Image 1 (spheres, one colour):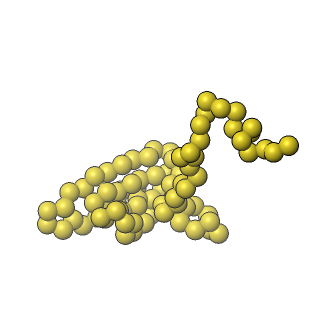
Image 2 (image 1 turned 30 degrees about the vertical axis):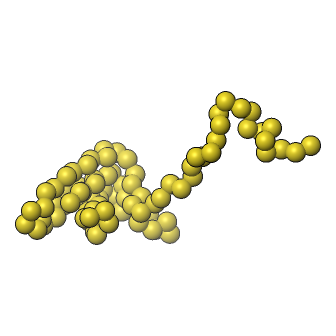
Image 3 (image 1 turned 135 degrees about the horizontal axis):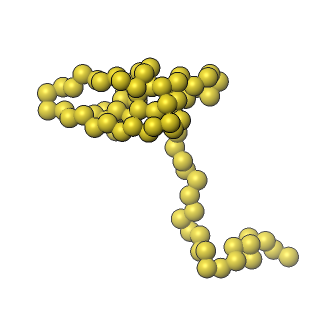
Length: 85
């Protein structure tokens, strides 16, 4: 079980940030967002706790950065292959 703590947590873009909060992740899935940085989840037998403190950062749980350039070649001038004359 991982708890990620941050100064601000945004769970809905239409609402103001929650302020200090703890995000609980179990088996790779977010299972809870709790107000305050001191939340400690109840652990089942055999579970261990990993804590990550992001300090003054703002956390947006569930946001996926899918902006990648897997096929880019930085050694060439990219615009020559994308612009036709």
